Image 1: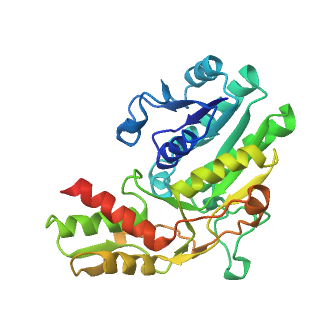
Image 2 (image 1 turned 45 degrees about the vertical axis):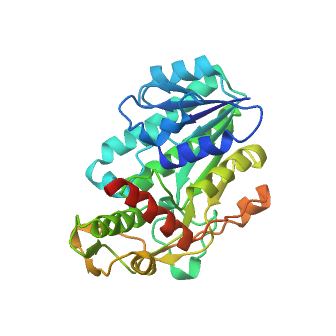
Image 3 (image 1 turned 180 degrees about the horizontal axis):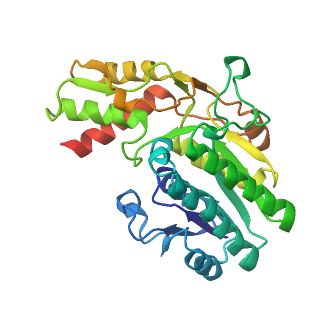
Length: 318
């Protein structure tokens, strides 16, 4: 079976490739931009066939789909940072909406029997009242960022191609996923990287943080990878599934875990520059639909996530 991952250099893409390589009978292909950082996938060369192009270019993704004619496609390529979308809303729309349409058109033309996963986000839900938590897939979509809006449009595009052309499209609304190889834009990553810098004597003993009261649902990228494969094999086409742990953790409590697992004492200081123009107070998902469809459940908790990330950044800042 031929499997294609777009956005393979991203944190989920590389972990998904790791997981798929443990399965029998798969031929794995990755689609990446030529300028993407290759370090997260260096260990995959020789085991995964890499194709270069740009999801915004219909010719390059069309050529890749025609060449591979995959039977399973995981569409992870995206501008995936809400904070960046405020500074570059049009670029975010182009990557996330036009890029998804370019992929769907290529599938429709060259391999309409392929099963396609489209990665959405909990940011599509936007403002949620505490009484509506945990959030179910039937909750209204009221995104608060250009990123969230772009993902709503990408999701609806995928569902439209299922309804109009019969493509086997399954959508996930992923809540926060976290793990090594992710860079330092995610809140937990910034905390752990700062702690590693402080331990190495390269930063003053102050953890600079944003909104500590927000509560988020985090899932390790290795758990996400397992869920994606199971869902594309067992999920119902034309359906949307929350991909989440089902538990919301206060950001301030994660900071405290970083402090406890750190090797030196630190001060915690709120940095106004790290506060967003709009920030959902709580995002926690109901994952019962995913569990029922696949039997999946998360295995890695927050304490282990923090420990892994501290070790990851310690190895990179010395």
